[in-house]
Image (cartoon, rainbow, N blue to C red; front, side, top):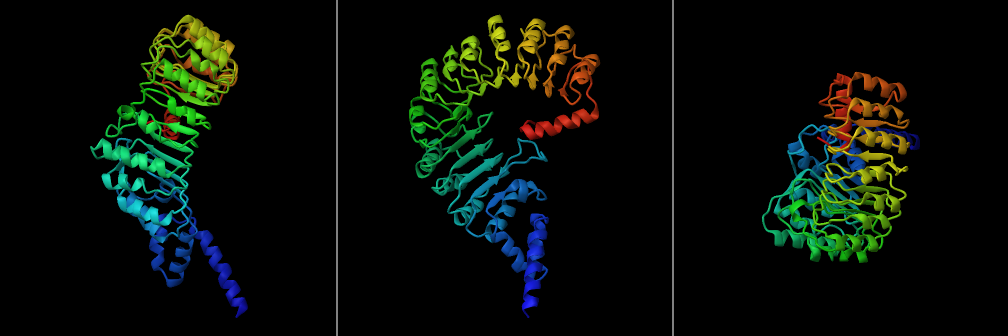
Length: 430
């Protein structure tokens, strides 16, 4: 009898291992095979502590994601610590198609996640009932992230109050992200009063929420002693606010102030000696790059896409930033062959370079790309002179370098285009 129970227990453990290879729908369906399988599968669900649609919904149609996740949550024990809903890494639908996160899913999550630590929702449609439930998430929450979601309720005061309740309840929050590129959060307010509710424990703060973002000062930063990453596209911050930001957050590693039209001078960023990544896309004022690069001695990533007021001294400053590994200069129409050559000579560690639509560049300047000994990925979209000869020059020195070259004399092969699609999906680009 003991041998029988031993063998039975070993078999059960083997089946639990096998169940990991089943899809979510298969696990739910196979509960009907036998009472023993139902018991084993229910035991499998009870061990689950992470609910992630990237894993659970790979074989599920988008319109059934909420039903699938709810069916899983019903079977789980109250041990869920991480919830991720809405990502679609295989890009089986366009980003404009939003998945609905039903209130029933959140109700079940509240029951099964009394110690929830991470909540991430992307590319979803949220109705009023779902928004109302967000403020009831566990006070143990460390990560809250909403990206590219649509809030379908036109009562800014109510929606804002729900988020304020969430922030006040989750007083040990470490990451707060609410962002989108096309104003999906126009029906709420992220203003200076809102920012005073951000917990002092936050180290990652991304509030690129389009029209909802109405902050004008950076007084809130004084409380955020652990702040390491700050992102605020289209903010109303002024020069004085920027100075307050950098003086009160000297340990910033990542700063994104793209499209900040009220800041006329960015030179004060230069005091951030630990800064690794700086994004200033779509700013059309004097950036004072020389002061920035002299001070930010650890800078590895610099993005200046469509910055129309870059001057010769700015380009010279870029070429002196020898620590750079990634440089984005998309749409800089006054970038010349001489500038590109100085960049190639001055930044030997460069791994990723984007000079798409820098239409003043010619084949003479583009030849210097072959000198970048660590180049892994180069984007030359929209530069007509880029041709097969230049591709061969680059691949002779860097045979595995990925070349993105749409709208050029060079025509990418089918394999290269499929490779670019994979990269776009990994980067979240459409």
